[in-house]
Length: 359
Image (cartoon, rainbow, N blue to C red; front, side, top):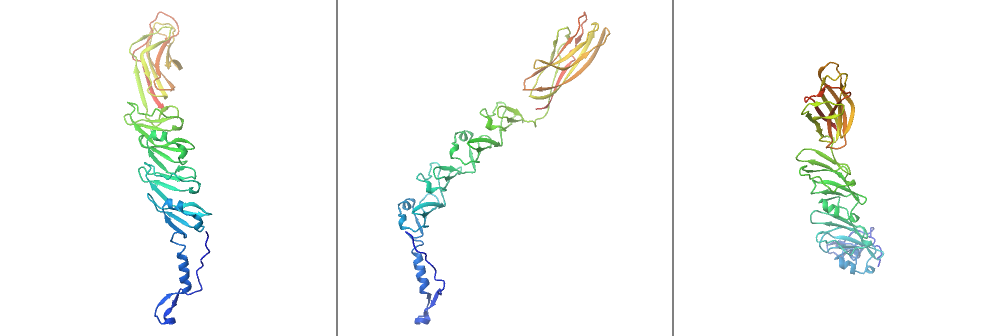
């Protein structure tokens, strides 16, 4: 039902001097204001008035036809705080307040509907979580979740608020953000050893940028979306190998014994070949030195020519080589370009040096 507006008697004095009226010596509330407060008390603070209090079930059982439009009900039953509903057109609508309880076991209300849209609920167990009733389902509006990697993957994204962050507590607190229905890596670095290799093995395109800091080699790895790559902040690396025996040259190209390196890293290298040639009774033959990288001959070529019977000299050449991956083999090879009866050679003083420059 609805009630008529109760208008305060502004033009009436608040008190009357009863002493002058009947000699009682008392000052009392004037009759007009007394009647106003009496009528107001019938609508405020008592059941059936403008403000009501009781349990959730009491509210559902209350006849809204007996309440004026705009009347409030404060649900007082435990657990949690008092949520407030209002009568509008004979129906109860949630308007304010937050209820709380445990998430495990789940104490969220199970009888909410469209008129309860906006209902707020907060968990009291750890970690704390916040939920909002959409009118049809619970939507989690916790700004940041703290839980394991496995629990993030297992969580249904349909009931989670867009933009929520998830801190993976078992992976050095790396952070993911829910974008659409997909978790995407946004920040943080996981720590672990490279031997044994503790880098995650289940990463994909949505984990692009994931960082892993090794605790045993002090290196930083970045996940590209498909593979691990060392960060460009790593320091330089130099590898060196010296020939282990002389190589007598023929007109067929041969590898210089021992002058071979297996590269430690992928990336850009400056490689130097130091050939110590001996030109021995080979007429006008030209002695050539090569770099062979991953089975492919590189340019340019080192060469040596002195037309005397016996001559010895060092000859250096440099190459820039981009290794597509770690484990590439680079080595020196040599040949003489014409026949003859001489015994020209590459001496064991020869060497190869590989300087890593950048990724």
